[in-house]
Image 1 (cartoon, helix red, strand yellow):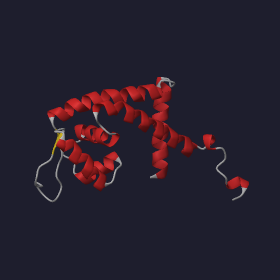
Image 2 (cartoon, helix red, strand yellow):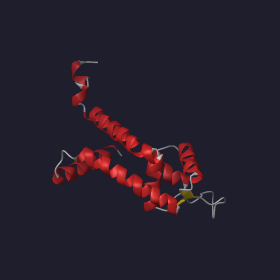
Image 3 (spheres, helix red, strand yellow):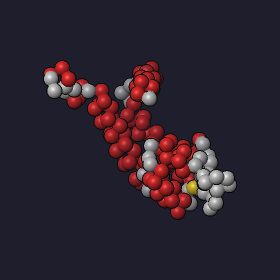
Image 4 (spheres, helix red, strand yellow):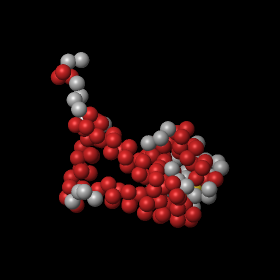
Length: 146
């Protein structure tokens, strides 16, 4: 690989720094959710279901960025704790629409508060316009790669 093809110092490579930021966010979220006995995928699942009740396993897996097999484990754990409900048989097709229970909504409220505190800590160095710009720029990165 020639000098011109090298990434250069990793701390100046956008992809590397973005991954470090994502990892730092995930670590902080894990710590914030641990006292609530939730993982990040479980929290994400509850959050998605609160905004889109009735999603199937496959739809939830895509929204939470896990495999369908992993989503089965997430859903089983949440169901065993009484935080979600799923019918035993599909009303049509094979999809089992999932919904939050009252206990799930209560747990989600506590988890959302914890996660919002992590996000606020992460964004503390930014002004409101800078936060808006960061969100816009990250969306542009996603669009460029999709």
